[in-house]
Image (cartoon, rainbow, N blue to C red; front, top):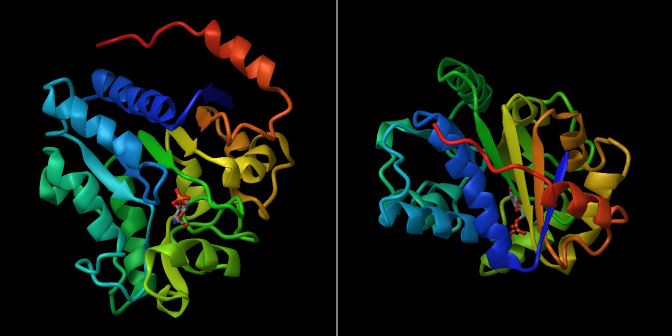
Length: 260
Ligand code: GLP
């Protein structure tokens, strides 16, 4: 696992965006896995900026989002459909039919989940998956206890996640209790994983995910099983890491990515 420590949120977001651009430079029709939450916002802003400056083209890109709240229609301001449209899709040139987001309102979740998995496969698999991390160490909505080989399915949110996400809703009672989410196994199938984390509320989860044991109690620790996972953190999120000097030494010696 590569650990990249940046001085602040802005630098971290730029470095993460660069990893996405590197993939698009070698594969313009890449399949990107998208994440929601406040952390990837800076990454999306940077990609939008680069796109508007003519430096990155998304016209051949396909996307798959990690998750969606059950019960929220696409036009609900807290739905992940809405979030992605607002913060990313409406600002770049990804063809509409290439955008895939789990449905929060399907009448048949098991069938939808199977279809979503199949669709990822049909598109050739995910080349780069963007991830955030919950304060309980989850990736997507794979809460503590999620099988490390889980696939797209319904998941009940943990109390911690409902508390964390209540800030986006008028009242805690409005936070959906269920979500549809890619599984840890689905995520591990992506060719490259890029996890971003910022702020001191993430320091413990990052330390557990990067330096703790691989455990379903911290599903982000599954990144340790992946051959090409990068964890990008700012100073505050890095606060609990014990091998910091080593990570910085490795990163400083890293050659630049090749261009196509
Ligand atoms: C939600 C999402 C996760 C995200 C997490 C952290 O639970 N399902 O994908 O990583 O929130 O969000 P934030 O970046 O706002 O802390």
